[in-house]
Image (cartoon, rainbow, N blue to C red; front, side, top):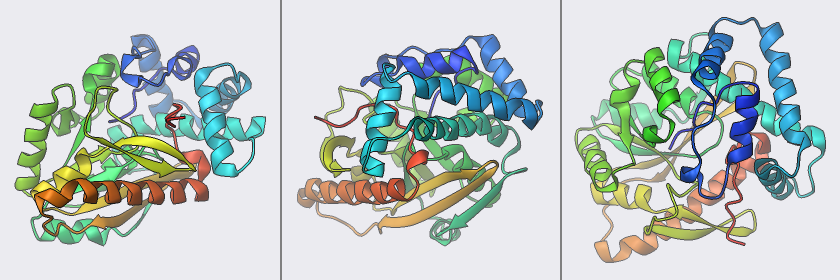
Length: 318
C-alpha cells in the first residue's frame, strides 16, 4: 500500500517510466537530492514556479505512448472514457497525479491546513470511534490517501494504521517520516505477511482502524485473491481486507479522497460490510461478493472522475 515519493523532473519521469506489472520488482527511483528538492518545492516554492513545472512534467509523460505507464494510462482512460484519450486527456491524468504527489508532502507536514477537504459519510467513522469499535478502511490508488490521513488527524480518538511496503521506498519513507514523526508507528509493513496480519487483528481488537488499498495485489505471489469484473475486463484483487473484517467481525468501509482541483479534495466513506458474523464456510463466497461490490463502486468513482485513478499498470488479466 502507499505510493512511493519520486523526485521531480527526470526522477518523476523515471518513476513513471519504470512501472511494470510486478510493481514490487521496481526499484525506488529519484535520488535523495531530488526528493529533498521535491520537499522544498512542496513546502517553500511559490505556485508560479510549481504549477508550470508540474504541467510540463505531465506533458512529457503523456507524449510518449511507448512508455509502459503512459500506455497503461491510455488503456485505462480508453475504458473509462469509452474512446481513445487525446494527448491533453493523457496529460490531464498525469497532471492530477503530479499534484497529488506534491500535496503528499504538505499533507504529512501540516495536515489539512491550507487545503479544503470536504467529507461525505464521515459519520460512519465518527460513530464507530464513539463506540470504541474498529473497522477496516478500504481504499484504492484513487485520489489521495494522504488526504484521508489528514482527515483522521482532525477526528479526536481516531487511530488508523496503514498497510504498505515502506521497505520498497526507504529513502522517501525516511524523508517523509521527518515531516510526520508519527507516520512510522502508524505503518504496518507488508514485507512479513503473517506478522502484518497479527498486527491488523491487534489493532482492530483494540478499537483501532486499519487502512488497506484493495485495487492491486501486493505482489505476484499472493494466493488469497479473487477475480472481479472491472471496466469490462477481469482483474485480480486481494481478499485479505474482506476476510480480515469478517474474522474480526468489524465493519468494512470504502474510503476515497479524490483530487478536485488545486488544494481541494473530497472524501467519501461508504459502508460495504457491517460486521455481521459470517459462518466460516461461507466467507470465501462472501469475500468474492464484497470484492465485486468494491470493484463496482470503484468503477463508478472512476467513471465520474476518470483522472483520479493512479494505478499506472496494465492490471487486466487479458
